[in-house]
Image 1 (cartoon, helix red, strand yellow):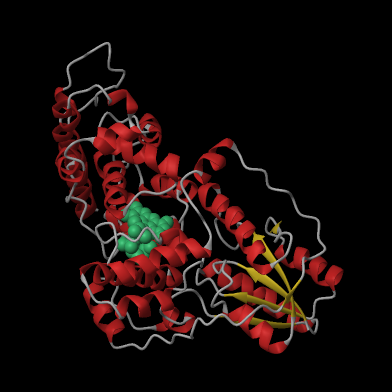
Image 2 (cartoon, rainbow, N blue to C red):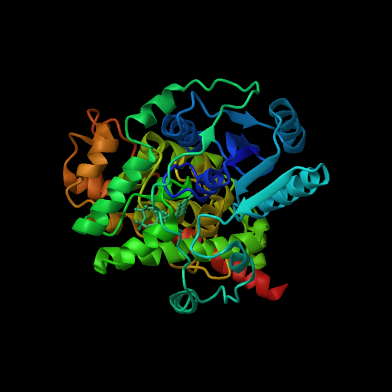
Length: 447
Ligand SMILES: Cc1cc2nc3c(=O)[nH]c(=O)nc-3n(C[C@H](O)[C@H](O)[C@H](O)COP(=O)(O)OP(=O)(O)OC[C@H]3O[C@@H](n4cnc5c(N)ncnc54)[C@H](O)[C@@H]3O)c2cc1C
């Protein structure tokens, strides 16, 4: 049977249930990647990751290329063309449990079933099934309880044996050739996007306990399906140590955020704690620009933001630090930061990103409270005491003594050092943020 395979968060050959089933059924498979903002937000760094990964995957599937089909909200119309041009008899894809993507797949199923074309949607790259993501009873105010529920659940894991390939063909369809921009070419210098690399990293974590302080740096591979999270969960479970335990806990956060986001898709732009929708955020846009460009005057924040731009990735601690800084010390609404992350992260994932931003800015129903504010000076001392990281990403501080990098408010003016120290001290910014929050609480209680 001629089968159209719409790739999404499953850019791998090994242990890919759709390819395995197609082999068993003797199907001829036509893979495409669909890009449509109505189904899912995909741009910037994560789109670059997709382009690069598709090159690797087409090599593994032994086809010249896997096209990225852009449908601009018109996915039924474009799919209809592809189905007709290629004599397609069946469409398969993996579910992405965001509401828009899931609704889109429902629409596709409805339309093509009525035209006599078969469809089959496979389970998402999650520990939970798509049904549990939507229906499992969860108290969103209690992550610990979620972890205990998860402990009692069996993760159904299908083995990852290499089965061989079904017949794969390239679709006949006009699609754009994607050239890399300079920024994308620079990203290429940092990453090897293929599934083989993901397996190497996971293997070294499991076998040698090799994880950078509990960080696997697997998030882009997980986001794009080059790692099967069920297989990862199983492998980590076989080698219990502090690192593997920490990574398993992180995977539970991911499930938790998927459950939250799948049920409340509006949380990409509206605070889950509706009260916070009335909060008076700052409209000083220069703050947002300084934050994006890594020019806040706080070296650890600036280095992290420049790494985010340069590498498309920063670790969890730095994500927490810079998002807390924007939403609290700068009091800029979390949605602006979240959209910047969606554009600049190679692992940009709607569920994890929007939920994390809501959590850190005190706007979700399971939040880190607004009055808990990270101190970037203290964090700088604990994360980078010798300022090696800062010097790597903020080269204008190369000749600046460490004591001033750790305490930029005291940095003397030096014409040799082309770095702007902060306009306000951490203490002043913290007081302003807290007094704004206090005022808001008072007015809110009166109304
Ligand atoms: C403001 C903010 C925005 C974020 N946006 C994203 C995003 O767009 N995409 C994304 O994958 N993660 C996001 N995270 C979560 C987390 O920072 C990254 O997943 C993590 O830094 C990836 O590093 P790692 O692969 O070394 O994680 P590890 O600690 O090795 O964890 C293993 C895997 O678990 C998942 N994970 C880890 N921590 C979290 C978490 N807190 N929430 C959800 N999943 C987690 C990731 O898939 C990760 O690869 C965000 C966090 C914050 C604070």
